[in-house]
Image (cartoon, rainbow, N blue to C red; front, side, top):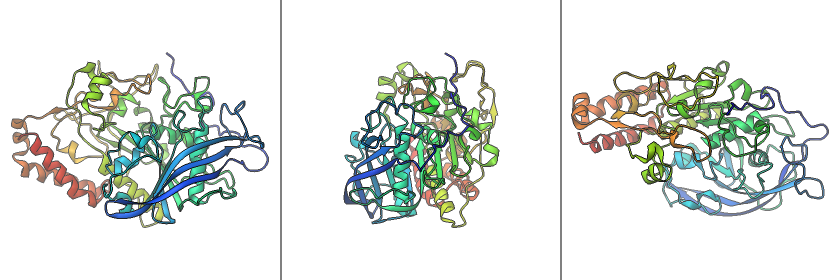
Length: 492
């Protein structure tokens, strides 16, 4: 299979339609509101359906031939939810859904939701649960469906409609619109918005920016001021212009080449601050080495995290049984989590937007080397894909953001990514998990002595991260409790 590059070079902006501003808009809202308690904070949760229209001049492939209203506009509907103080606030975190699920919310608040989570109106959040992240930082939260097969108004033949839905939902939440207010109840409003995604939803964020859907049609400025992409690393979805001649699908093309940052950010008047994250396994499955060598002329804060792309959300029975990872042979999985770091990064982003003398920590990318002979890397024909150099003792990646769990580890991350390491389909995901070779009790005692010796070294590494700005001090005690439990569970 030949590698796939966008049919329209991404550094060439889409043509601007002539005439009056685009008439795409959310025209009607159906919603109900009820109190929700998150970690002791009572806010309002609004759920329902937005109905909207698509101007035929939108840069959406496949609009021609779809049913239209009397004004020649396609119509759609999509479910949504908003969690916020009554009336709104100054800042909202918009979660780009991953397969219809709230990827960022469940990560930062550590929610474990049931199957209903793919429907914003049906999702149930345990009363009083969560880390309290949203309340601590005064962040409103919102999401809206965008994916074909999930959002009722996004057909398989014109999946770029989903980008318009996300854009216009952001416009509605931030008053960045010249449209007539939609019929129905008013949604909470916010001063500015952050669009964030993890994995597939990060690729939606990249696609939306690269294809010009962060542009406010009435004023030309940004809809979302910041875009945070975890495991984004320049990957894009084949849902619209970037799909070229390929059949549209809400996932990567197997040989799709990640876009360098200068090909994503081509509209200075509307481009968001792009904050990008790569995880360790992303170098093996998702070609993170391409964008690691292109720091966007210093304009893109890039952080490499020594955690696997995917954590423990899926049980072993699914990973090794249903998906058949590692040939169906169960092995321990890399337990390192990036949740505290994502909370810290989003809190930093919020401070920057609020002008509270906030600043993002310095970019931190792994030291890179050519892959070793025999290493399983999801390659691209004719493209060199470097991977992180590793410590000869612990086999943890060198450089990047120095997680305490990697500086004073309880095991070695081998194999780095579970086989098969590919992107042939939306279910070819084994390479998102990493293997783990835990130290036995004797090695743990030789390295750290007892639990107090381990925690002393862990705390020192943790404090270095706080001083460097990569971690918030609020995460310290929680991480130390987790480290104690992990060491004792290892049996030393």
